[in-house]
Amino acid sequence: MSHRFALVTGASSGIGACFARALPRTTDLLLTARNAEALTRMRDQLAAPGRVVEVIAADLSTDDGRTAVIAKAEALGIDLLINNAGVGPFGAVLENDPGFERATVELNVVTPVVLTRALLPGMLDRAAVSGGRAGLILLSSQLAFQPVPFVTTYGASKSFLLAYGEGLAAELKGRMADVLVLCPGATRTGFGRRAGFEFGSLPGAADPMEVAQAGLAALGRRTVHVHGMAPRAALAPLLWSRRTAAGGLGAVLTAFRRMPRAR
Image (cartoon, rainbow, N blue to C red; front, side):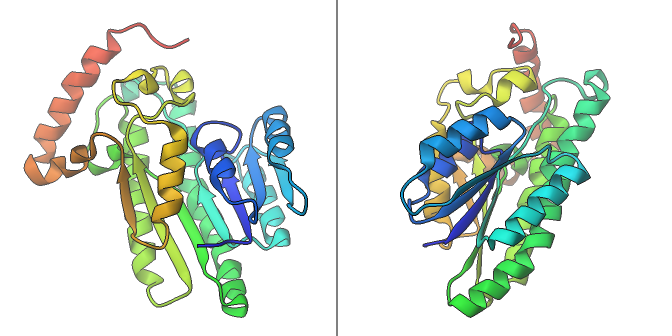
């Protein structure tokens, strides 16, 4: 699928930066993240003759940050929205910083809902005029398919995105829009440094560029794409009870908690 203008959230590093790099040079870009210096470097790297690359530094866990990005995206007339930004703590809920727990829900749940609801109507209108298609990618996780102790809030936020994306795709059936929920497993990014555990160091962790490319390739072909070397994890609820799945994963992550934390 060819899109004229894409908004990528969390675009300064990790999978978000790889989405920005993987999009064709014919797609103009609006990149947002909190790190202004990293965004400037991304803009310089991705600039090309005839290509527009705009950046806006914003904290998308806040209303002010979301409002600023929505206004910029509407002014540019985006037709592809990649809701990639996300955070999440590793640890027991009652031991985690309450502010980090709240920020996880704000960024992983509230932000995609607010951006999608604000931007999708204009994207659909422009698609109707141009004859193209609006595109929406929601970055979920393999953790979305079952409860996972010690990443409880993060996993629950990704479960929300899975259900939200599937429901939205059904509502938009027959309209000029493609919705994809992308569910990678462990990926080699800097996410773990803030979470408190280097998930990217796990055996079989995926390359973030492969995840981004797989997501772009799946958009318009399916609603949910599970990526990674262990997609069977997504089938756990079909094979085990949710209690059994949570208990088994809890035991594994309890062992991880005894390992040295990321710095």
